[in-house]
Length: 86
Image (cartoon, rainbow, N blue to C red; front, side, top):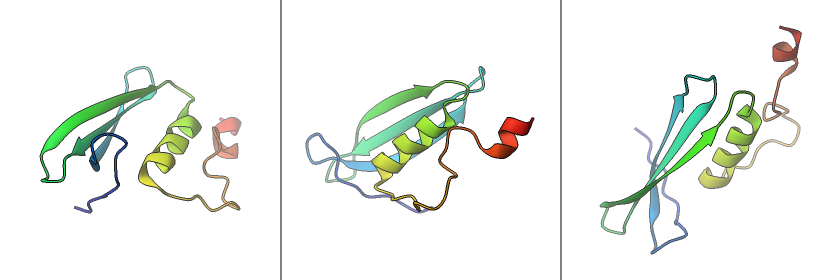
């Protein structure tokens, strides 16, 4: 399992794990778990994204994981053209 190590905003924490679960309403629940410098869990954050908020969720993940999307890639739009045709 790959491990993401980023400095947290509180008490020198590092991001330990990010979990994404599909919600019953079609949205997603995103959980961030943090750890201290010794590797012990410190806290969790939960974020709820409703149905149709995929773009917001992806933007949120990009920010927390320190990723930079390819500016030519429109995969981070809220809805893709394929979804709009359905």
